[in-house]
Amino acid sequence: MCETFKRKQSSRKNTSLLTAASIHLRKMAHYLTELRGRPNSTDYRVYLKTSDGKYISPFHDIPLYVADEQECGVPPKKLKMNEILFNMVVEVPRWSNAKMEIATKEPLNPIKQDVKKGKLRYVANIFPHKGYIWNYGALPQTWEDPSHTDKETMCCGDNDPIDVCEIGSKVCVTGQVIQVKVLGILGLIDEGETDWKVIAINIEDPDASRLNSIEDVRKIKPGHLEATVDWFKKYKVPDGKPENQFAFNRQFKDKDFAIEVIKSTHSYWKALVMRKKRNGDEIVCQNTSLCESPFKCSDAEASTVVEAAPEYGEPLPVPSEVDKWHFFTK
Image (cartoon, rainbow, N blue to C red; front, side):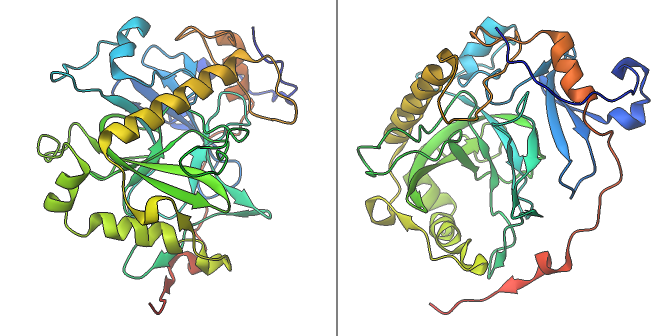
């Protein structure tokens, strides 16, 4: 079953006839990214596809659990005894400012830059931070249900996949899919909504074997957790908004707690994609045939969506104010 999308079709030729320069594919382990539009513009999109060229949704088609990839034809990496690994879709590379996110309301759910009041969103540099201080992204096949009041935070979900702060030393790229192990979680209350922030480490990171809990982060990366709280507390202040609030008095919860939260958001995602229609909800539950789901889209339909997007072009200049450094008294 597939959503019907009424999108204006372009007259450009089939993707197979486009030049390699205009397609701009990047290989990310088992997945490819295809860039469309011009970076730093409202039409810029990062589409994901499998290594054999099938377009997929990073929201719906990539398995949450690494172990589940075997069912989808992707061999999983070896796991340690009782260790659970998760797939993470990187939306924002560390040190960058553009607020990139999975477009849950668009066909194929590409990654795009958020827009507010007609302007592209960039996070401010709040001293001593520069842009995002982690590789920031989301766990696929999760959803923070806006109709569900979390029993821990007493606030409803934010209507997005659950967020991840990957604290490794490597700087990733937008659209990269990495395998992470969860270390803990922070309960952010963002404008009255529950917005969990999972703390995780890329299993390819040199420190991955030494980081197995939130307490390990305190010992091996001193100051990082405090900086994370400070960042989320203040990042909207330059936009004229109040400081964000937190559950649990700003304390991080442990790995077991985090995994239970992830499991609950996975169950909400399952409920979401089983519904044919949600009243008042514009989330697009389209996916392809990579993994089982009641919402399926043919390869031809998926290709049509991507081909309708503008071809990749040179990046537009970033506004000069993005480089401004903001200072606040404590």
